[in-house]
Amino acid sequence: MALTLTPYGGLDGLLLVEGPFFADDRGFFFESFRADEWEKAGLPRLVQDNFSRSRRGVVRGLHYQVPPRPVGKLVRCTRGRVFDVAVDLRRRSPTYGRHAAVELDDAGNRMFWVPPGFAHGFCALAETADVAYKVSGVWSADVDRGIRWNDPALAIPWPVRPAEAVLTAKDAALPLLADADNPF
Image (cartoon, rainbow, N blue to C red; front, side):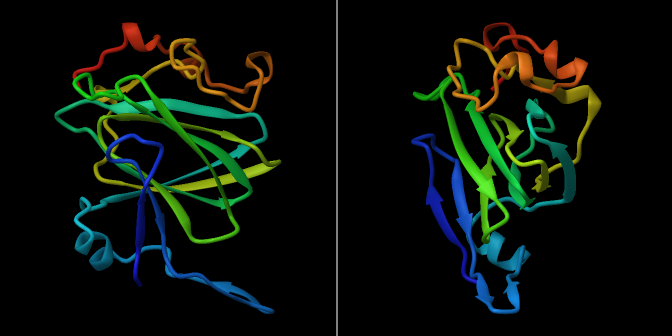
């Protein structure tokens, strides 16, 4: 499997990742992940798989983990379509506080790499959206953090109005970026 890694959104470290995709009249086939190719590309080892199912309008995020256990995420939409977002939390970065967004869907072999130092979230655009993501570390409650999805300072053009967004109580109460616990 030859991976194609394309820098994305003008934020250093974000990548669109694509692999071979073979479609014919029967359907399609692709390798969804190969550790040797991933590591050959110089990317960190991935150690855990996560999976979520969301209905239209669900917003998950914006989440991150702080040191000593920050994580990167390789995000794929396996069913439906999502608006996927990464926010640069690296204070010394020239793109600190900027975001990049991409629509991911189930029509090909395209993924979004969000490295440590970024907050990540998404909004389900289909009636049902399944998102699978591999992470470079395990989830730990003691280092789990987040920022508010609709922080005006981020100016993310979410495809859902705030009154129609479906959030957990935890995500709705996340701090603004300016007030977040952010050691990056």
